[in-house]
Length: 88
Image 1 (cartoon, rainbow, N blue to C red):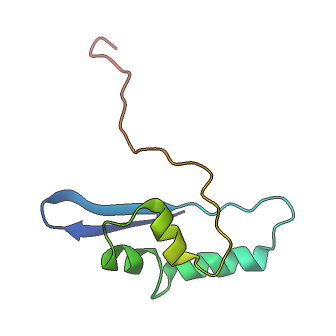
Image 2 (tube, rainbow, N blue to C red; image 1 turned 60 degrees about the horizontal axis):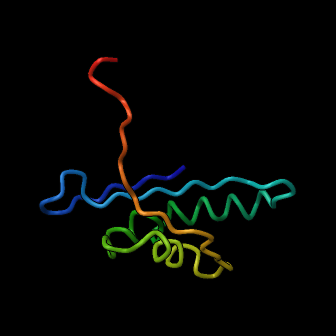
Image 3 (tube, rainbow, N blue to C red; image 1 turned 180 degrees about the horizontal axis):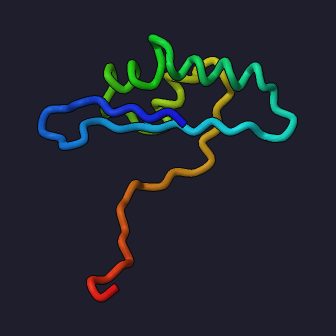
């Protein structure tokens, strides 16, 4: 898991993005390690988010893993929901 928080004027949290890499069965562990190192590098998540703080998740993924085949399977708007009540 890699999370980046980049300060932005007028935004309490700034620009925030996160990436979770998970190995699938039969995955190449060296390839996965290479992707993890890329996220930490000079062109990694924080650097890309700093340069392009308004990027969508798909745009960030393309910048980070542009050499890889990427398929966006679904798009969901980000929202916060709390189903709790003051009585609980």
